[in-house]
Image (cartoon, rainbow, N blue to C red; front, side, top):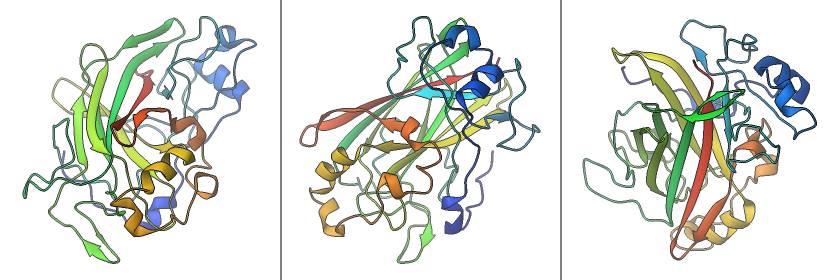
Length: 281
């Protein structure tokens, strides 16, 4: 897999996928019986296997190519899998396939410099989903990338900075037999026009290492948590962010379903877990 060419910053607000009505999602994923009388569900247009219809096209009923996830891991519906349908969102202009297999993504590997900020442990729990429930999904490649405390991405050229050749706050892990992949990072800062967020990508590979399915989306944080973090150094040197979740164009495309629940403290570090289901056969 070669590095993916970076897009222009304008692509950061390009929508990918869609949110289905509860009724349509239940029909598409064969969960009507399980979810009868249950909670609201929304869904997206991916992931699609290579060569499949474009993102945003409804997945074939019964074939099961859809991403699913929940930051809570529960649904409040008896017998319902902990993974429910979620929307795909744009990868943004800052995706680079650095191929950095590491848990701690805070440092730039070339200089050794570690990014300052409130520690954040972000854990993914990836499952294979069917109407019968969720089973751990091993060997899924989970990438994350996000800006530093001052809104700067590594290996990028943007108005005001160039970090080409650096790779801080990027990396991937493969899920283990328990379906888990965990990262040590820092809480993200902000940049103009976007709410605070973390990008993630899920890829499945065949025996030869070829990507067979690819799904990208974003995670968000509660406003109260952001305010507490961003009141501390070095975040507070940038001033008040200009975009809240409610006014972010990407968040409006299902971001409330990607909202992380954090535990811990600003002083001691934060922890968040995101459950993601892949109905990929």
